[in-house]
Amino acid sequence: MPMHQNGSLQVCMNMLILCSMFSSKTYFQIRISIMTFSEKLKECREESGLSQNDIAEKLSISRQAVSKWERSINEPDIETIVRLADIYDITIDQLLRTDLSIVKRLAVKERSYKKLLITVAILAGVIFLFLMSTTLAANP
Image (cartoon, rainbow, N blue to C red; front, side):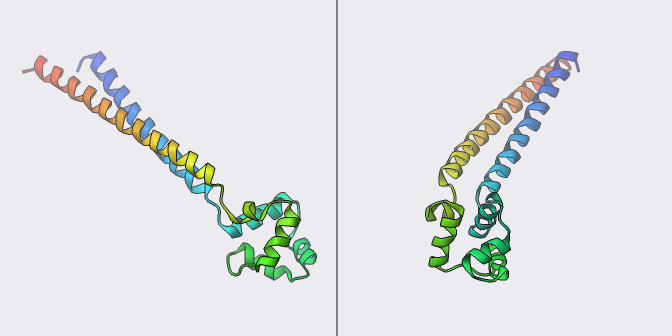
């Protein structure tokens, strides 16, 4: 196979590899953006620099209760959720909801990456077919 055709084939392969990297990166970004309530509780506590004991003392409950919330074994009642939001200096909405704007933004990126992946795969296929046809035409 002539040198220019071999180089073009390598470009096609590199484009396919790049597309697969984009695809898996997007999936990873979306997976880590969705947080459960228990994960949110733990994150807020850690960002506040507080231990489970500190939270337990502020709420007059056991440390084990806080641990169970953070492990999704149990959930606090609504009064406690209000108090937790006050302790972490966030709204109840911020505590209870995931950030839907991030999820939506990442979903748009995923669609864009999928379109890019499909476009590059089609382009790589066309280039490959062109190279194969010119090779076959040159070597009947």
